[in-house]
Image 1 (tube, chains in turn blue, green):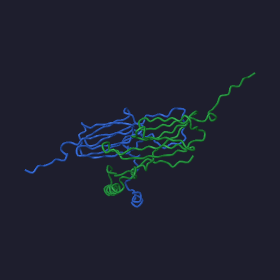
Image 2 (spheres, chains in turn brown, orange):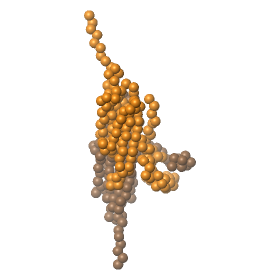
Image 3 (cartoon, helix red, strand yellow):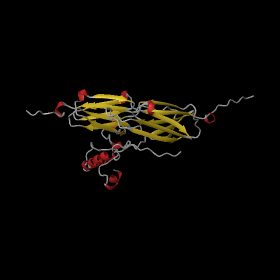
Image 4 (cartoon, chains in turn green, red):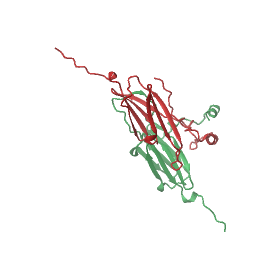
Length: 134
Length: 148
């Protein structure tokens, strides 16, 4: 894919860190890595949010989108000096659109060891249905 | 100290940019999907088996902080060999939890004034913090001078 990217000019590809332009109150944001798996009756969303505790996490479900905000609250103790840094302090922000086929009232979220697992049951209307031949 | 820098995955390196909008997106996500399908099964394509680490120090200790989300404490291995701290973590794939089999490995060059005794590690909310005490002679010492 990298080769592909070097061949095609990046017209619309921006680094994910720039996402969050409409959230000035969040400061710099970064998109966490995530994975979506689909089964017959639910969508499973797994998001990597290292360093995020339950209280730092905010999940908002709107009619056709889901928004996950995780604020990093870890503060470096005052007498620690940095020798080398790779992690960022920016807030995690993940916004995913869906086609209104998700029953957000029955959504179930679970956070363990920095991994958020969100289960989003599909609405009855879009579940596969078996049609009997009369 | 020499490090190979970890870079957070960008949209460029992430699979399937399916949620953005733009002229190239349809084509791009389609190509990504093909490549993903062909490459699935290789260890953690998004990060290349690496993870970000921070190194801090205070007067008595050196701290290494690593982002390792979603591992079992028993599956994390921390070793100090020849002035390098090696962190290894692995997990089995789990279809129910939508987890891929993953193996992470990272070595960090340590400052010279660190001892290998009394190294401790803690794992909280997907962050591993390794505390390495400094050698006695490297710690600042207060010498009382008796004035006669």
